Amino acid sequence: MNIQAGLDISKRNIIAPLKVVLKRSGSIESVHRVHAVVSDEKGRILMRAGNAHLETFIRSSLKPFQVLPLISSGASEKFNYGEKAIAICCASHNGSPLHAREAFKVLWNADIDVDFLQCPTPVGRKSPLEHNCSGKHAGFLATCKKMNWPLETYLKGNHPLQVEVFRRVAELLGLPPEELLAARDDCGAPTLRLELSQMAMLYAHLGSSKQAQIEAISRAMVSNPELIAGIKRFDTELMLRAHRQVVSKGGAEGIQCISRLSDGIGLAIKVEDGSARAKRAVALHLLRQLEWLTPTGLQELEEQVLVINPGVELEVQGELKFLES
Image (tube, rainbow, N blue to C red; front, side):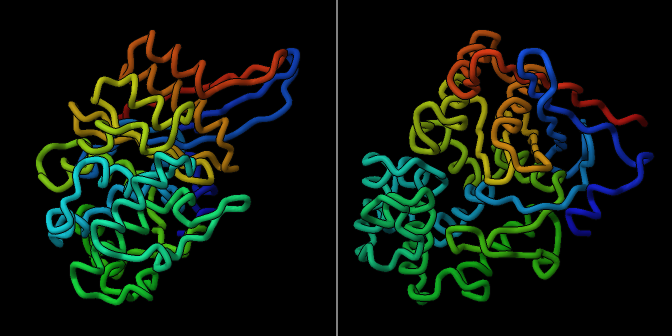
């Protein structure tokens, strides 16, 4: 099923999607449609709004799972990577000196030259280390170094590294790896097209402590939220206020995935038109409904990540609903 087919399924199969309405001086100016689903680690859909089976690309929300081979290969142990190294490999950071330095350390510990990075140098910057995906790429290279896999072709879909990433993701979803559909992300690395419920299922695994390697990734993320995105950016600001109980990782084109660690359930959000402001507004709305953050924390988070101009307001309509038996 492609994304358009997913948007056109019959009404009897869906609960109404959420709507984000932008009003200017009280008049409606824009409307965004948003799908969201909560799943457990067995893939059971617990709550939803809109189409839980919508297929779209997970984009950078895949990063915590692209780190798995770094740990399972023994590379993280061989190169003495701590939680900061794992966190930067999961990051979509803002290219600050802090972030670039941590990505460089991943390469330095593995004795890999920066020139092997295949993420682009951002416009106006001086190094690929400043690219928001540099940590992920550094982790890819470190894994290849440990496994004696080619460094020059680490982004190819048939490279042993990417095959292993697909295998691990498929294993978590209970699927044969050949059923996964990959496409090139903007940084050059493969990303996957998944159902929204499958994304939520992956994050339910991330929120569970049943698998040590996955638990190490979630622990690294919540212990180092400033590395995952950056100050005043959604993922960092949410995790700073969640007392190590919520892990969050967004992706481009309106993708947001969140997990409640103590519950082992995952939430996945997709804005049809890819709007970032609508994604943030819905995430705040659903965090409030699910009570995953305190009222004070939610207010502080909203003040940091949902700044809009005077005379303009965002209103989220709808909520997650339990499935009827």
